[in-house]
Length: 489
Image (cartoon, rainbow, N blue to C red; front, side):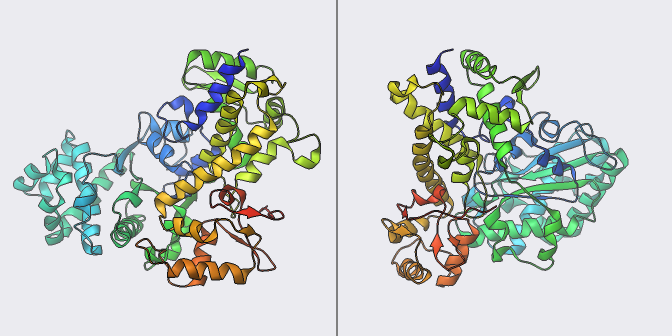
């Protein structure tokens, strides 16, 4: 076996995230995704890096329903044989308006009209050669309107059709009701999938209007329509935002799927990505390396190498990869649980991107220091431990893309030592709120800011009221810690 090739395979884990890769051989189907087959659940909620976009891209891709959910066929539920999935919104969908155009509509009545109109236009395009649907369309829309709707760029120009919906919403709504009836008679399902809706506008008020009205509309028709359904992928913080509250919003809990990763799933993802490497040489070397642990992977002719679901086998692989402990004794920590424990946030959530990045950074260190490669293990415990700091910086940088005001948090905290008394931490937060900057937190008081940081998993309040921060954020915000963090169970 060539250690250099093996380490280069690990290093590439940090090049692209798990859910950005298009190759189906990099996609890991987990049991939790089977909940997507439940037609009553339409909100798919997860934190930054939880894999929402990768699931979305796979779902709307070729044979996507089967790739994500599997071959299961259940009574009165969508399956790979009877379901079509359309893109409702994605920033990469060039048939939809860009941010500048969408930003011209700021009121809920306009953003609601956009979503309903977009559904109708998407369906008209999808059923363009379907005689029955076209006949229904002729019943509710004039010939002039239908000719307008046939233009390839019509979705990009909502100014041309938004008023048509607002003047006669009953025609558009009745058309959708009829399409649902047609689907029911044909025993078929059609799912509209929405992702990256937080990228609709950089203006928070406009963005929240679009998100709020999208969820409101689909909730309002969720029991009315039997076969026309949706899946909306949304970040956890947006889902929980007070700006998304509306009548009956409290009932959304039963319509929600929470994407989360446990330790076993993360390791299965790691093995899946390693075994299906970018080059044939890397795959060949890695499969030979993995053969030291019988039963770790098995080959599937259509989707590549699949990892075992048996945790005891995966634990053997990690011991083979790093060693049993993260040092010379058990006091340094078990190698299997060490990485997940150090990469979870204050809510106990783990991001696949950070997990893979940790192993990529460790391999990079090993490649840069040939003397380290003399060890029996492919990766050393010290290389893994050192990688956490880089992963922390990377994770904080990711969060700043969604929350630019976190740069101000780093400014007021950098160089401090945790644990910090609640009183001292509140003084820091008051300083942050008082900073003369264009980018400010979306809250007005210290307590609201602390609650926001806790909801994001950035800080944790101990029972003695002292404030702590998990290691995944600690280094990225330039902090040090005295003592340890009690991790969520």
